[in-house]
Amino acid sequence: MGENPINVFNVGSPDIEILSKQNLSFDQDELWGGNIVGVGGKPDLSKGFIFVMQHPVTTEYEQSRSNIRETIKAIDKLKIPTVWIWPNVDAGADSLSKELRIYRETSDSEHLHLFRYLGIDIFCKLLNNALCVVGNSSAGIKESSYLGTPSVNVGTRQKGRLSGANVIHVSHNAAEIQEAILDQIDNGKYPADELYFKPETSKNIAEILATTEVDLQKKLYYE
Image 1 (cartoon, rainbow, N blue to C red):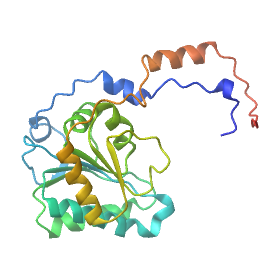
Image 2: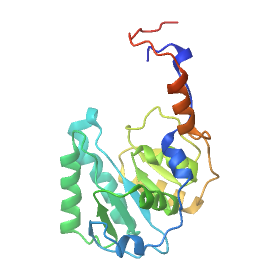
Image 3: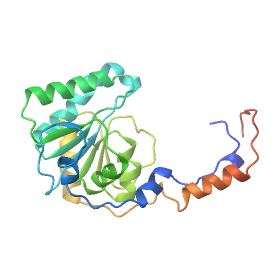
């Protein structure tokens, strides 16, 4: 991106460092018995669940509603207990949220519960204990690889990002998504992959910032 390579430091992902220090054991009472606000059914998660995070793709604004419908169709067909995080606030989020509301209010969706936000502690536990992560969040690429959680990456939002063996990439097609989820559930946990992990990430960041001379004038580097 125009930076001189001598000023680029690969120290690993701070997200993964945080994740590596979390207590990842999960009890569903932390969701249903706590103060976390969500809407929908309260399915039994003790025998396994799907964790869905699908955000809008700003360059595919016009396709936002049709894209999310395909994922909804796949999840509805499976009827596996599902925890779903509402989409982020990028352009197209309103369309995705509307489709989720329509589905929840007009269909048999007792297997599904939607959350606006989850704290890092419970988020990490859900990510670690899910049968499969579905959608297009970076968590389905980065954090899931470290945990070995099976992941189904839908669409183009993470296109070009390095991914581990735990990820199956699919298009916005309900049948394809459903098949990939079932394949991942059958496979189960993958070996942990340290693709995005390096030890002492935050310490190394602090040391680099404290000891590296920074040129405040931006200069584009060309080989």
